[in-house]
Image (cartoon, rainbow, N blue to C red):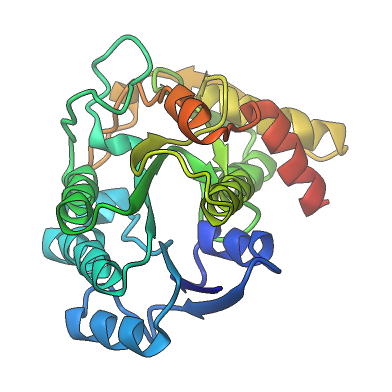
Length: 289
């Protein structure tokens, strides 16, 4: 089996390259070769590779920056994935695509299910929702996996930023009223492999949109506390953490207060579930040591 992975250096892509080893021949194309903002380039490379499966792990993920460059965000997050879906349909192969909790506005008091009406607050969420819609319109054989608060031991993410700041500063203020599930990119990659194996075995669940996050919930402040506790366990310096409301930390793009996603449909349909967020964080940090 030949698997085309779009995106080379992102958190999820790097974990996919490790997790999918041995599952097939991996063709990994970064932005220098397959730029999702360049439709002709997408079609050219997909047709050249002629894969048996396409995984789109590339995206414009700079949430605040997207507010000032909406055309680029929509090109990468909406138009490009739609073209990937068109090409996958022409080849008759599945497309796996990653989306986000930011398609919701966070006003619901319970975890979001897949059938809840999206209402993104900013350009990033709107562009990702448009990508979901473009994929669904172009190709039935797709999996859109919505995840949240992704982190890993590489790239730019909350874990690495907190580890640095907690050791540099005496005191740190972190938002405590946004609730979600920190999700390790390694867990996302493992779950993706499990989904592919189910499909390969001829026992897939229904195609469509699913939620894929770690189990449990916390705030950004709670996530920072867990990171700080790990630093202390290693005998490293750690700042004093102070909880603050979102209103005390204004950003160009508004964030949903409730980012919790109900992942029970993925378990029912595909038999795939994630560990709780603390367990996954512990495993991620163990790799870093």
